[in-house]
Length: 85
Image (tube, rainbow, N blue to C red; front, side):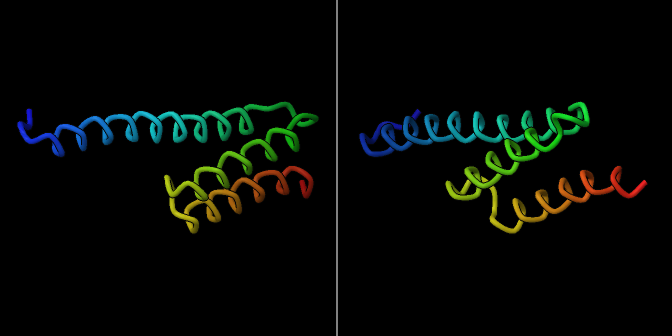
């Protein structure tokens, strides 16, 4: 453990931020899984929720903007595929 006061604070702040970031990342993963397992009639609603979670995580800097964009594109592609078949 650090002895210097500022280092002690940095440890506390880092732990708090890590916990917050982990919760948001978990929320994104959960939203994506809910969309992938959703019934066809609920798929669009779950896709919107997944998009929202990805956008919020990207806005907060937890995931990169391009990563969020890529994931959103892949999810939208999955929604379009059953309509074509």
